[in-house]
Image (cartoon, rainbow, N blue to C red; front, side):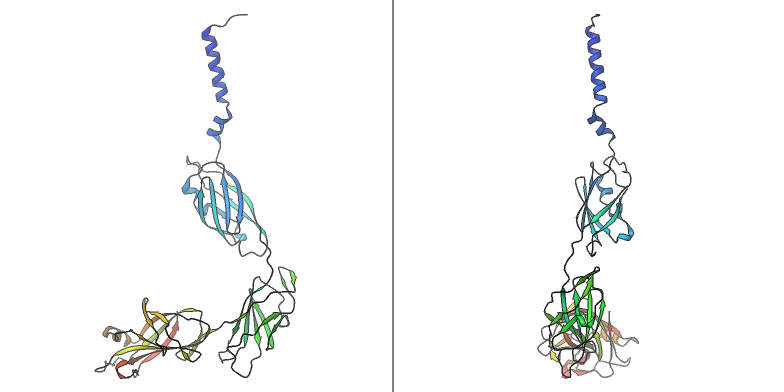
Length: 361
């Protein structure tokens, strides 16, 4: 057998080492693995986790537009937060579903740290919706015709229900004449009583059978009844208000009006609830100026000064001047709000010829 020289032995060893290195899995992985989605996990109905197989370019992986759910699913991505090679998607639309469902998700245009764009990735994401029992979440009295007598009760369900009928409800002390449902709210029409009963809070019980997600429901837990109406009379016209309301008082003075000698002109705002003055109620006018009602339910605008000459000029314009108000009403009830220009130095005598119009924003 021919003996190899030391030089040949060395060359043979180097060649073997180079071959071993060339086929090493670790070296192949580092050089050739392409960016892809490793796993998609649904954390809950508001969060989905997308895990990549390697480090990602932060800018591209943080774009919500690179994660798109199928249009028909009703699910959209509103925000993306990165944590290493994981993208945490904040989603909306899944939490309002009433049954478990799948939604197609497409991930695209995400780059790795070297700027290479991954291939488009598509998958179906399964959202699990826990089936909740049907219950009343809110029961509120209403006075829809504003005559001081209860005529309706709004019942809010925890889930949408169908096949609702007036016979499904019992209202203590009242007769239910009709039931109409819109969304999760069923409005029960009541037979009015002869006397004022706005303070009444009759118990409402479920005594019938409805359906929710196609399944029969025969037992529904109720809640205590509360007063649910806020009715505001603005200058003789009734408006149904939410707790916080924005409105305008459009005031107009005759073009020939002049400030009376020795007068102090201010707007007087009177606020009552169920005929009783509302005291210590702070509201905002002209976008940021506060005024507070006194024990008589009266507040002045301006609170301590008189109306400026510039303001009077605006009030004498042909279209008058709209003064914006923002008011938060403390509780449900029948309110009346009246604003008028008065002479504070003459026992709040109303300014003659002034006209007022109330408008909701």
